[in-house]
Amino acid sequence: MDVVELDNVVESEPRLPKEAKRILHSLASNWTDVEDSKALEVIQLKGAMTNEVYQINWQTERGMNPRKVLVRIYGEGVEVFFDRDDEIRTFECMSKHGQGPRLLGRFPNGRVEEFIHARTLSAPDLRDPEISALIATKLKEFHDLDMPGPKNVFLWKRLRNWLSTAKRFCSPEEILEFRLNVMEDEITTLENELSKENNLIGFCHNDLQYGNIMIDEETRSITIIDYEYASFNPVAFDLANHFCEMSADYHSETPHILDFNKYPGSDERERFIRMYLGFSGEKTNKFEVEQLVQEVEKYSLASHLVWGLWGIISEHVNDIDFDYMEYARQRIQQYWLMKPTLLGSEVP
Image (cartoon, rainbow, N blue to C red; front, side, top):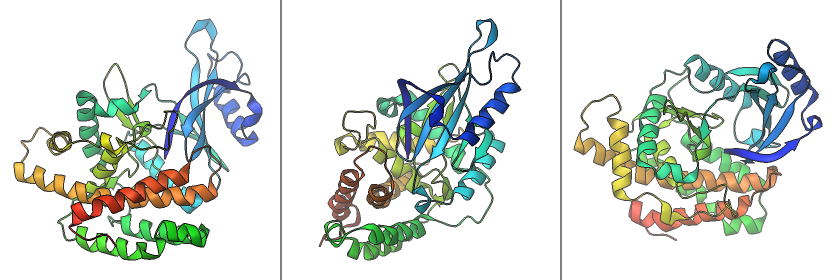
C-alpha cells in the first residue's frame, strides 16, 4: 500500500543503492538532451507504506523540462505479503497492455520505472463525481484485462496466509486483543457466505486507494499504478476495498486514523457501480446494479480483515513511520461492528 506525494526535501545520491545509480547513469547517458548523466536530483516521495519511492531528475540542455524517472526501493520484510517475482511479471504484463508505467531497469532490492506525467489523486478527489466516474470506467477496463495464469480467486488463500503470519509475529496479548484465534472461523464463514453469490471474477488491483490512481489533467485519463497485491478475485471485493479507502487520508497529520463516516453513502455507491457496469455504453440493468451493490457491501468485511492483518504484520516487519497497529485495530473493529448488519449474525 503505497501513497506518494512530493516532499520538498532534496536528498543526496548516497541514499540510492549503487546498482540503482548504475542503471540511472546508463539511462541518462542515452538521452542526448541531458547535460550531465551523473548530476542527479533525488527527491523522496512521502507517504509510502510498503516501499521507499524517489523521483529522479536530470537537468536538460536549452532549458527544456528535466528528464524524470521513478526509483522504487522495496521495503524490508514485505516479502511476507506477496511474491516479488510475480509482482514484476504483473508489472511487465500491464505495461504490454498499455497500463501503467514502463519498467526501465531492475536491481536486487528495487526497480526503475517510467515517470508518469500525471497527478496522483488526493483523498478528496475520490469524492469528486467526475473523477469518481472516470475511476469506475477505468476499473472495469482493468478487471477485464486478459492476464496470464489461472483465473482462481486468491482472496481466501491470502487471508489464511496472512493470518498464519500474524499469529507467528504476535505476542499472546496481541493474539488475544485482535481475536486471532477465532479469525480462521471468521474467514471460513465469509468464504462460505460470499461464495454463494454468482461472483463476477476479474483481475483485481486489491489496493485501490487514492495514491495508486493518477489522472492526466489535460486528457482526463486515469492510470492505475502499483500492482503488488493484484490478483484474480471477485470484482465486488475490489469495489468494496475502493469504497473503504474513502475513509482514509494518508497525508493528514494522523495518516493512520480512519473516518468511517466518510464511507460513501448508498446513492454514491450505486452511482459508482452504475458507471462501472455501463462503461461500454450499454444500459445498466437495475437488478444487476442492486445485486452488485449488495455483494460489494458484504465484501467490505473481507477488506477490513485483509488490511487489519496487513497492519498487524507490518508493525512487526516494516520500519516506515506509520502507526500500523492502530490502523489494524480500526479495521478489525469495523469488521466486528458491521458483521451483524451485513451478515445478520451475532458478534461473540
